[in-house]
Image (cartoon, rainbow, N blue to C red; front, side):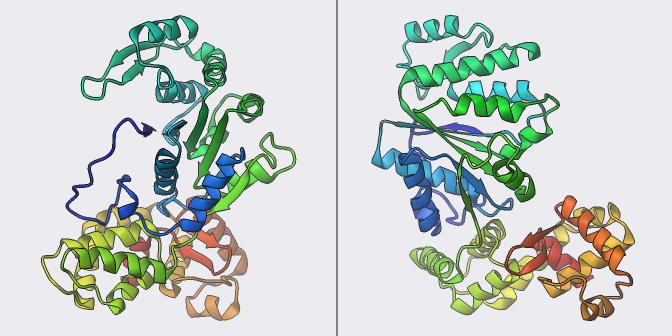
Length: 386
């Protein structure tokens, strides 16, 4: 579970490998997303909430950190917070992580101010302590499950009463649809619409759930946000970014090698970063396609047991369709006679059922432009080799 308060301290830029596979350091190690960054910054500045939707590992979390870094450079009066609710199971969990993320972070950090805050939050019963290095407070909460709604109200009252400009990003926001409590969407919406000083980024990776939340007429969040989706970083922009980082470290990455990686990974950000990270790790001034193949083979060997387990969790018909999609890289018409005949997919009805199941399990995704593809790019390569 991740939660971050921004501008407590600047992160150290002395890193060993410039191709980050986790976390955010600075714009120096962040590729492109200039249009998306500008859109989000402008929307928040002009009092619009954002729903940010993309498949996992496409870079939405890094983009949020990048946006908040920009706000830190441009306007020190904006307070930015981020937390991830992927691991939460209910409203009580949500209130716990929400409270730990924001409570005490808008005050002057004096013990007197925090003591006053402690008396204000009667349901949450926060206990504050101070970090020995940064001097910032950390908070522990003692909230009973039956007091979750009251605690949530206290948090929003605290944010509104601060009268400070606040931006909050909630990652994997679609998780609230899984909570056992009824009416969580409506409850959150009832508070958010009366928070003039607080703007939100609702980020999610399950497109069908996020689309339903923000686009269905009968849902509380209907048309309450500006919708932004993330696709692959364009190959030209990514190539320039990668070659520059290699060059700065006296290494040469030929365009053909980069394009080979991009095509194999379909430009999917995390997988691109992972392969480039492994390539950079090699103590060589220049690289070949054979280096890329050796890296991929090593990774696939390491993941072999995991990928076999994936296959054991689905039916033979689903596996046959999954392998067929992997071999084609992307499939725009899975019910087309030629495709079905090529991979011995017998009945359209069976393919439809298998396709739905694979989509539900997030083993495959549907691209609005190019069709269906195996979500895990490494798993896709492994399936191709079967």
